[in-house]
Image 1 (tube, helix red, strand yellow):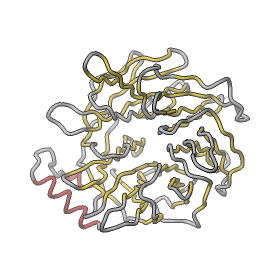
Image 2 (tube, one colour):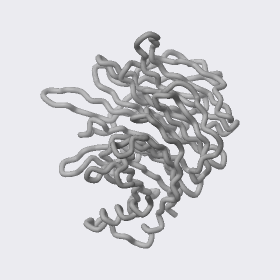
Image 3 (tube, one colour):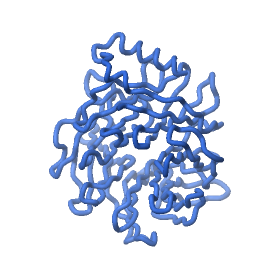
Image 4 (cartoon, one colour):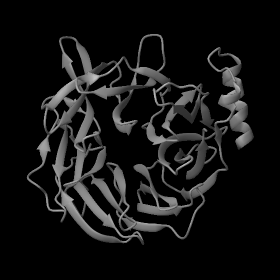
Amino acid sequence: MRSARWCFVALLCAGSAGCERSAAQRHCRLGPEHTVALSAAKDFDGIALVASGPGAIAFWSEPSGLYAQRLSALGSVEGARARIGARCEGGLDALARPDDGGVDLACLLQPTRGKHEEAGGLLRLALSRQLKPSARALLGSAGALSEGVALARTAAGLELVWHDGAADSQGVWWLALAGDDAPRGAPLQLSEPGRVASAPSLALAPDGSSMATWAETWVEGEGLHSRIVEWTRAAGTRTLHQVGNYAAMPKLIAHNGRLVLAFRDHREGEKTGLYVAPLGATGLLNAPVRVGRADGTGRPALVACMGGLVSATPRTYGGDYFIGINWLDAQLERSRGEQQFYEDSHAFTHVAASCQGGHALLFIGEFPQLTRPTAALRAVSYTCP
């Protein structure tokens, strides 16, 4: 499979002046691939990856439930996989607890219909080092179209943001938990009522406070409009950037002593791309810079690693679906060529990432095809010295 992937990169670069193969670019490389799990599912609800001890823990949700698997630093499977509970139809997020080797996990539950009806909501799970649930709590509410949840840990405790979606309303909500997991007040709606909000992201600013971001779309006059919004407890909401892509999928990430905004956008004459820009006290510090193509169906993954940022983005080329991987330096410049996780007749649509010190680890979900009806989860290391 590796030879097929490298062959594909060569074909892309052959007709592009932007693909010069310098000696430094050739240093970026993907390691051996490891199969983490196979599934009969038609798709995954969501995946997550957290660094833990010398290795990592992979999480994924499918119709049969929520699962966890410990991995080595290079992505090989360690021990048996664990079933954590019921599926997270609306997505999931996870944070490692360095103090005890456990994990804090948020699972967004959509309402169930039929013989046993259950309301949707945000399930917060505390997992032990052995990946056993030691505490759980159902918080907030979530409708049938809910999609997306994020966690952050401040000095005061965990904070959560999630998307609550129904046919007549789609908003973003925030909730803070105390050290004993008790809610510190009622859930707060962050998004503007009457607008269609998307899945949120949550990160810690350099001062230790949290910042949330999401995209909102609305009708004004005869057209659709979309913007990326940020929220902090101190300043409330403000517009960060107007976008032409109604699935912008914004994400915040701490890098080089500041927060960076990453998002998808569609601009005239170009395919949908991934853009990044640093944040300052008054908004974006400079115009967003395009990283690469991002026209796949899944969300981009970004992680601070190897002195820069690693971005892994679902994208296409012709009829192929694969993951484009780039390394950005401290100035958010892409100084090395893009790598691709690709295999002929396969469709890679999900990706998560963690930093394992001297390299990044990528956790990749494959959508089943007619010629390959089994979905798969794989892990691969990425090194760019």
